[in-house]
Each structure stands twice: as C-alpha cells, then as structure tokens.
Length: 464
Image 1 (tube, rainbow, N blue to C red):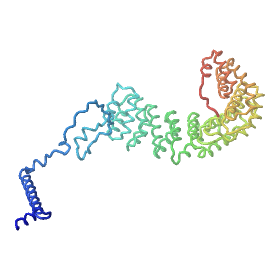
Image 2: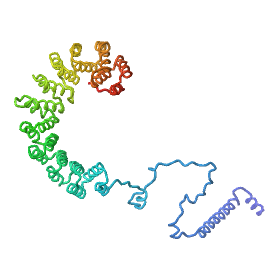
Image 3: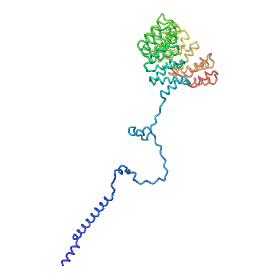
Image 4: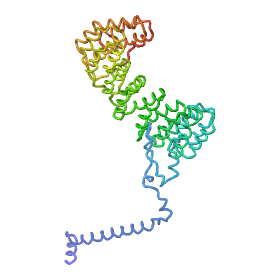
C-alpha cells in the first residue's frame, strides 16, 4: 500500500514535477557557463600593433554589388574641395593653392631701362616705380633723370614724381625747375603743383616772379599755383595779376584764379574789373576766366554785361552761358536783350538765357520775331527750341511749327556757312516736334553737306 501511495504522489500535480524542472534548469545553466568559458579561451588577445592599425568599421562591411545603371558624376565646384589649414598640413596647403603674381619691381625696372620700348611703356613703368615707393626704385628714376638724353622720357619721369612720397622727390623736382630742357622744367612745375606742399607754393611763386625763367615755365607756375590749396596762394596770385605786365603770364594768372571757387575770388575779380588802370584786354580775359569759376559768378558777370564796352558785354553774356550752374538772372538778361543794339551782344544774350533757371518766353519770342541779324536770330530760334523741349506750351509749339521749322529747314539746306547750317539742324533736333522731325528727314534726303548729313543722325542733344 505504501508503494502505491508513493506512485500516486509522483503522478499528482505539484509532486515530483517541480524537482524535474529544477534539474533541467541546473543543467541549462551549466551549459551556458561552459559556452562562455570556451568562448573566452578561444578569443585571441589583441596586441598593441593590431590596435593601431584597426580597420574602420565601414571597411568591414561587405562591398555592395555594382549598379547596373551607369552613373554620371555631377561636377563639383572647386570651392567645395577641402583644403587643410597650413598649420596642420603645410605641404598640402602649398600644393593645393595657386598664387598668381603680377609684374615685380625688377620687371618694371627692366621695362623702364629698355631703350627699345615705346615712350608710353617706359613712362607707365616709371609711374609704377613711383607707386612702388622703394629707395631702389627712386634711385633708378633719379639716375635716368641725370643721365638720359631723351628729354621726353625725363619729362615723363619728372611728372610722375608728383605722386612720389620719397623724401628726396621734392628736392629733385626743385632742381629740375631750372633744367636746360623747358619741357622737363614745366613737368617739374606740374609735379610740384600736384604735391601741393608749402615748399611747392614758395618755389612756384618765386618762379612766377623770376624774369630769367622761361616764359612758358612762368605761365605753368601760375596755373600750378591755382591748383594748390595752401595759405598765401590767393595773395600771391592776386598781387602777380596787378604787378606783372606780360600779357601771357597775366592770362595764365587770371586762368588760375578763375578755376578757384567764386566765394574765394569774387572780391579780387570785382576790384579788378572795376579798376580804371586795368586794360580792356585784361578785363576780357578776366571775364573769360570767370566763366570757369566753381560756383555761380552770374551776379558779377551781370555787372559787366552792362558795361559801355560792347566787347565786354558780349564776353560777359558768353561767360554766363558757360557757368557750371544755372544762373538766376533770366529776367535781367531779358531786359538787357530788349535794350541791346549790338547784334553780337544780342546773340550772346540769347545764349546766356539758355543757361538760366527761367526767363520770360514771351519777351524772347517777340525779340526773335523782329530780329534782323541772321546769327542773332538763329541763336534766338535755338533758345526757343530748347525751351519747347523743356517747358512746352501750345502757343510756343504753334509758333515753332508754323514759322520756325520752315525757316530752319531753309537755312540748313542753303545757309551761307556750314556752321549756320549745322546750327539750324541742331535747333530742329532740340525742338523734337513732329514738324521738326519731318524737316530733318527732308534735309537728310536733300543736303549735299556731309557735316549737315552727319548732324541729322539721331543723337542725344544737350538741353538747357
């Protein structure tokens, strides 16, 4: 009975089965431990050299099979190429970077000293050597100034030294002002004026007053002084204008003063033009110089335009037509036009009105209609054409198309001088109306004057 009961226990759930499971788990654990021990014993020990040359992970991957479809490589911009910094890889930096060098100082020296090269090439080389600024470059130029027999080359060298910062350049130029070659001396004057130093002012002023200096060098010194912005320049030029008597030198002095700002020179010109001791010829040159002034000299020129001398009146009106800024004397000029009896002065007054901000068109139109002098009438028609382009009105357009176009066309085809014929074409082009365009086509088909035919071609015409 006892055996039967034991068997019965073994067959019941929760009896001998737990023991069996425990045994199986023990056997499985032993197997795992054995495998781990075997694995550790069979794994090779990595040596130091093996660790240094370890293959990257990506290299151990299997190589993919080649693509059946052909591949077209896309061009990559050169900028995408990786360049290692020179500090990390100097050799790679040198090999991958291309340095393009321009001409060296030695190259310019060879060009400059090559007698077979044209003057222009050698002069440009001299400028480059001045720009380079080294002592060796300066010595090459100075040696050529002393020893070359080519005065054209020496003049080019002297003028290039105007841009030199070398401490000996000014002294070299001062010595060249008395050079036996007038051209070299004049080039040295221009270079000193470019440097614009107080020493240059002193040297040019002395040359201006030096009777033994060549006339052209003295004239160049006057012009050069006018370009320098240094104390004492205005006083030197003003005094020279009233004490030197040579007409050429005085003309250069007035030109130098005329190129300066009107705010700086107005007092001088006013006194000079009012002076009873200044000749009419010098006053004419002063008025011409005022036409080049920086600023608006119209008020001063208007005073001269009322002078009793018709030549001065004409020059003053002409200068007012050339000032860099439009004047504000339109009303006063129109009044002068009504009272002017000299035809040449009237012609210049029409031209001066073209450089004013505004004027009374009705006055000008009435003056043109009764104008008897051919040149003055042509100047008046040109002024009306200019006004028609910039400030059109039905009244002015009607007058121009009905009267002026036919007159200008006739003058363009049959005028006595080529200058008048071209001026008539210019007026028609300025007007820009349909009638004037038709007239220009007729002139182009019928004129035999090549200059007139050329003038009829479409081209921008400067207006007022």
